[in-house]
Length: 605
Image 1 (cartoon, one colour):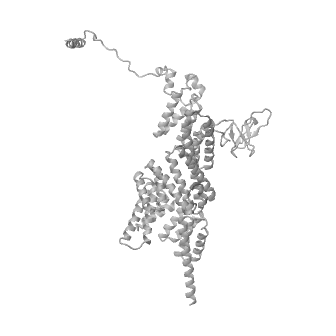
Image 2 (image 1 turned 30 degrees about the vertical axis):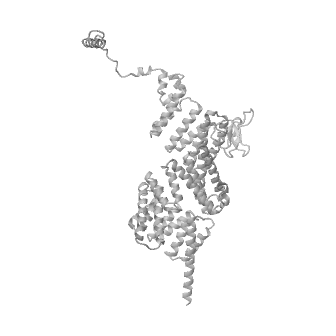
Image 3 (image 1 turned 30 degrees about the horizontal axis):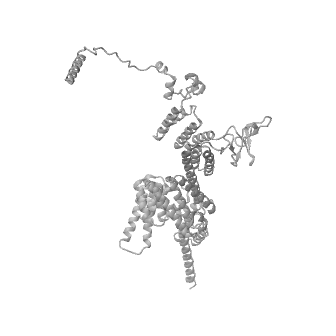
């Protein structure tokens, strides 16, 4: 009964509302003020609302001046709170990651107009420099890195530009004579100049451009980013190493002064610095091995130091996949040094531990350690392309089948990885060439042709991705000749390579070999002579030129001279490929001597 009474009352109330009587009489609603906001109404907003949306004066004319901006918008306009600056910075980073680089650049320029803490300004300058680096604007990027470095240092503790030793800034003394700066050529008062005690270099303190490496840092992030910029973009490895050494030295002081809550962040920064230092040393070693600019003992010292830094980084964080990959690459470089006999097994006993110091045992141990670390990196991330490619290079010397499997898996993950396509083609060509020396069996020529055709297909895929690469073009041309494809296409490739006028010795050597197989012996001779002129000790070029003179041009005396030059480089070239060339050279030289002796006997008889 109460429920029925309530329902009846509700129906009467609804009926009364519908007829305009009762609780809610029917009235006409007022119209809403929907109209476009005028410029005067927008200017009437409060200063706090302006700061909330990141309002700033236009960056034109006199309004860019701080005093003019304060006079127009109030004293607090350029002093926003930390949360507002951080939100704008995160928005700029997000715009950069999404590819809207121009919008991110404009927002960074607006951010730098704010007054903020030193740590926040260093962070903004670093990310702004990274943005310019991604746009290949290296000059502006270096300028921003220098600004961040100047904010990161203690101005009373600086290092000399020439000798990089600590030089304290002198206190101002009245009555001292002015001095001319040795770096920028500007004459300064003695109160703003410093003289290094070791190299007697006079440097001005005010301009700061005279100082290559500042004093100990309050923040190591800038030195780490600046070092990577010097290494990857400018190729200044020595400058990059000085910056990393400075960052590690500064980190020791930061560890002593930081609170327990900051210990985790300091540990992560130490991992990054040690990993980057090891990577830098490994790149220096690869450059020295390619250019043969350093003795083997110096290369070994750098490799041992790289292994120590990378191992220390993994001790702090065992899940750091990049350090694991670089450590495997370092052990692989040590194994290649041992295989070329540039160093002895006794020289790597500190890295081997309990392993015997014999040459072969040391080389096997280094290869196994490299394989172990690369497999651990692939366990953490099976799609890590660089680790899988390095593992394929190691396996190609011992097990071609496993190397081919790794390359097939890599290309299924990253089909556009050109180095893997080139390595796959090279392995397939080696498999086809090795079948020539095998005993005859059923369908031998068919299998050999199949290997060559698959190699040609791999090179063709690489050429589709890099049509202007001379290395890819020459590799594709050689594979076409091996698979007995269209000779006219090979001639077009040779013409494209010759039009680019290559200067690298290995490219010129491959071009000469390709021309020789096409029957153009004079042009092949010119290419090989040019390769030897570029690199006088390039072993394949000298050997191919000797073989060209021997078999195709008939100049056996000149061929003997080049064969002798190949054998004279035996002490310097000790890797597997060079030893194979040495063996072929001795056979060819012996053949020439024997044939000359037979001709002499026939002429006498």
